[in-house]
Length: 97
Image (cartoon, rainbow, N blue to C red; front, top):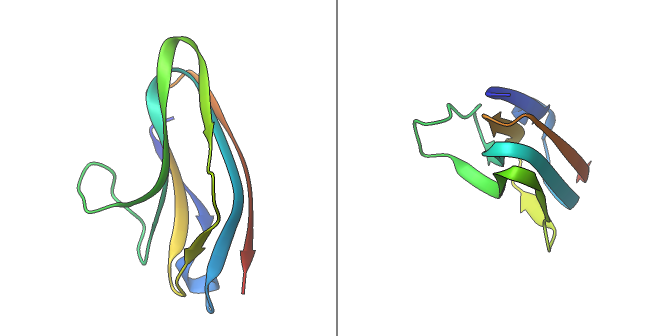
């Protein structure tokens, strides 16, 4: 938690990418973000390109599902960041072109 985790390296995304499915869940307070951009985001010092966000709840597990596919331009990476949560999970499928 409170860590930035790289999912897709911008240098590996030479022709674009598409996020096909995404479900995130979080247990406890805090939030989980899926971020994109040409460089690794520095959380808390914008601008950050937020693809999806799930807010936690201290009394139960919460989650969300991305309702549509998202296309990323070439040269953009993908990162996960979770803050102040007890635990969390991500199920995602994506394709690089």
